[in-house]
Structure formats: C-alpha cells, structure tokens
Image 1 (cartoon, one colour):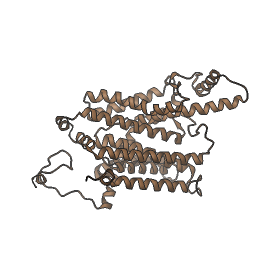
Image 2 (image 1 turned 45 degrees about the vertical axis):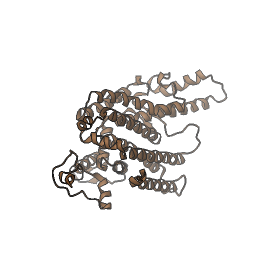
Image 3 (image 1 turned 90 degrees about the vertical axis):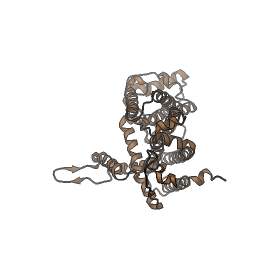
Image 4 (image 1 turned 30 degrees about the vertical axis):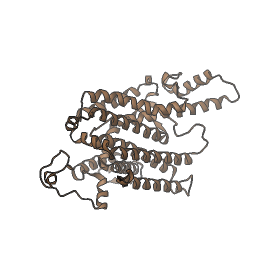
Length: 407
C-alpha cells in the first residue's frame, strides 16, 4: 500500500500545526479577544506577514522548483489588491454619500455620480471609469481578483515561453512587464486614481466591528489562505508533476527530449503562482489600508526573490521562513524600535540602513549558506548531505552519482 500524501510530507502537518498555534496565540493575546498584550497594529503586521508568506510560496514554486526567476510577481500581488480595493472604496464611498443625503431621496444615477465625484475629485474627475462598472458587485470583484492577474500571466507566459525565452532574458522581461504596469497605473487616465491609489481599505462596508476585531478576522483569513496555499503547493511538488518541474529547472533540454511539454508546464506554474500572489494581495491591502502604484514597482519583486533566497529556495517552508523573518525584522528596524547609533561624525539611522543590511544578508546567504534559513531545520533533524563519490550523472547537486548507479 502506497503511503498517503501526508505520510510522504510530514512537514505539511507540522506547518499547519505551527500556523494554528500561532494564529490562536495571537488571537487570545489581542485586544479583541484577550488582554491586549499584542496591539492591533501588531496584529495587522502579523496578518500582512502571513500574506507575504503566501506570495513567497508562489515565488518558490516558480523559481525554486521550476527555475523561472520571475521579477514581476509583485505586479500580480498588487493587481489582486486593486481588484478588491475597488469594491472596498466604492462601497465605503456609497455609504458616505447615502448617509450625507439623509432622508433626501436620490436616484441610482445621482448616487453613482456622487460616488464618482467623491472618488475621482482628487484627480480632477467626476465620473466612474468603465473599469469600475462592477465595483459595487462583490462576487464579480472577487472573480476579478483571480481572472485579471491570471489572464495577464497566461498571455505574458504564453508569449514568452512559446518563444523559449529563458534565464536572465526572461527575468528582464518580467521586470519590464512590472515596470510598464506600474508606470501605467501612475497615470490618472488609468482609472485607478494614479499616484493617489486607493485608500480607506481597512473599513469593511456593512460591518460595524472595530479595527480590533477586523484585524483578527483578517489574520484568520490570511492564516487559512496560507495553510491552503501550502497544502496545494506541497501536493503539486510531491508527485510526478513536481518531479517534472524540478527536471525543467535542472535540465530543460533533457526534459523536452523525453517528450514532456516544457512550455505547458512552465505556463501552468507561472499562471497558478500569479493567481496565488493575487489572492495574497487581496488579503494584504485591506490590512494595509491603502494601495498605490509604488507597491508594484520592480524593486518589490526583487525583494521577494531575496526573501525566498534567504529562507532557502526549493523548500516551501524555507520560503515561509524567509518572508516571515524579513517582514518582522523589517518592521522592527523601520518602526523606530531600534535606537540610532551616534558615532560623533555620523549617526546610523536604521530606517535608512535596513536595506543595506538586507542586501548584505542576501549576499552572505548566497555565498555561505545556500540552503538559507531552512538549513536550520536540517541541523535540527540531523540531516547531512550524502557522502557521494564518482562523476555526477546529472547537473543538479542531488543527482545520482556514477558509483551509486553501479551498486
């Protein structure tokens, strides 16, 4: 009898257990459901961290397992945020318009015009653009969270992979796509308020709960999404599909020679991870409260690759460890919790120096600890690299050796 999925992947159960304990612990220490040891702002930070862990899993699937260094996945993350942000801002503005009208009756067209003036008055407009047609329809906007980034990834991936663009050239193309999208959204003509972005997203229309409760609810939603995302990713990489995409990563030409549709596999992973990133963004920005085109700048996608590298690419829990570590430490350094260091001639302000530390950490991990933070798990489990002899029979460090093949 073949072992089941969980039997072959015990790390999944351990991950879900740790995630559940973490979520319950934060809940019972929050202002909403406990003594308030953890502040509401900290609960939001932790909820956002879980969302970043989810997009890190997506990045690990596309880069760590398939070998596609995408420098554009934060564009999908931002698009997911914009799609849900449109509904949040539209409904919040609608409530404001109706409450200000009081008992004075307003026609649907008058309400719609007032909403357009409220939202786009800041950029000199007064009408809702066509892309806001379904902004007041929550099911449609939730569908767009998946469809818009998914279709963009599908079209881009099809054009790139059918042309067999690989390596650094593909990375540059994904970065160019992100830059083009970001620059387009900076324009007021984009219909998404240009540089102003969408704001006030932390208020959920029709919900009377305060921020204390909302922050915990979003923490729960983020934890559920992360848990489901981890299970789905582990299922994908544990079977034959996972073996094929790892083969593509290690030797694409050989996999193609064996008759597999390399472009099809790469397109599926690229599109799937774009959807996962969009879902993470749709949960992240209501907790952040605002989204603007700056969130989709190419540097954000580069940071994402750094998180995965620091955690250890090619391991799902490594991606989670890297994203969680960088997010929490970044909040610590940039939140004014670390005192500045006066040197007399210069004062080290960690808000400015944090990115330097992050870059240094990336270089050190790349040179000295290729397994990243996930290597700590190996040390705890006593896992060591096998003592192998002979010539390698494959390009990957874990490939079968000549002596082993003869035994």
